[in-house]
Length: 201
Image (cartoon, rainbow, N blue to C red; front, side, top):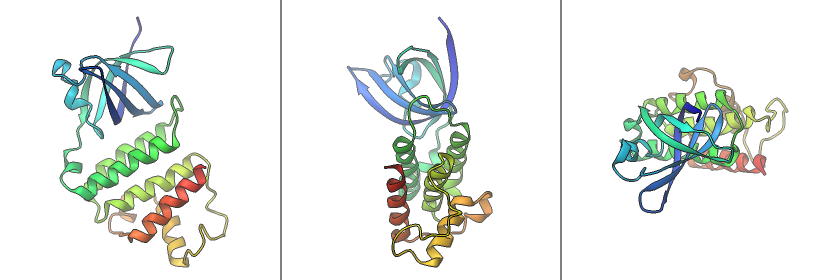
């Protein structure tokens, strides 16, 4: 039996039977699903480890099917600071939804994984955590080759020149200092979210 280890961020968990858990992890190797026996009980300490948004290292037995067997795990970062403010938690949850909507099982994405971990660490320091969430959505589009932002056309009907410039800035930012003081209106957040969904269709 070959045993593997991999780091990842817990995206969701689904209770199975009385104590077992099926959970999804985003890893450098892409989305992966695991089955943990006794995961929702106190055995192996997996209950707290499998809280969504926890970054952990998972030890598992590989399966030829899509669901691997989780043997044990250890926390790398439980991101307590994300849970101190509702808007931080909501923005982080938005990143999770963006990953689940855009990625598929077994598609390697080490750069996107590193970006997710980096963004989760930066959210508590942001003036507006939604800046990181929207930047993350736009960078997924670039990462997956779904958006050529060099085409000088309006990104969506009714977009202003200022909104277009801001959206491209969010998509192309390379350093934290470019984002940490920005703030987004609810309207631009909704427009970027709709833009993201449309390009995935």
